[in-house]
Amino acid sequence: MAENPFKDLESSEKAPESLKRAIVSEIDTIRNTSIIIDLYVGNFINTITASLGTQRSQSTAPKEEL
Image 1 (cartoon, rainbow, N blue to C red):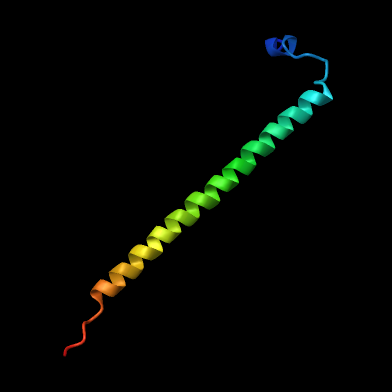
Image 2 (image 1 turned 60 degrees about the vertical axis):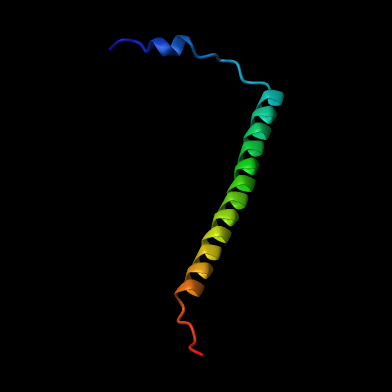
């Protein structure tokens, strides 16, 4: 069985703690931004959907005769 050539590419050194913290911070920022966008866009779409539903129910309601 042949030896894995990718083993030669792996470094035995560990990443510095400052790099680990920077990566985790970046991931947290991306996650938090995603949550804010999801809340804003989701609420915006829900508001439009509810508004359209209200308008449709008002336009299809039977009108009272005078």
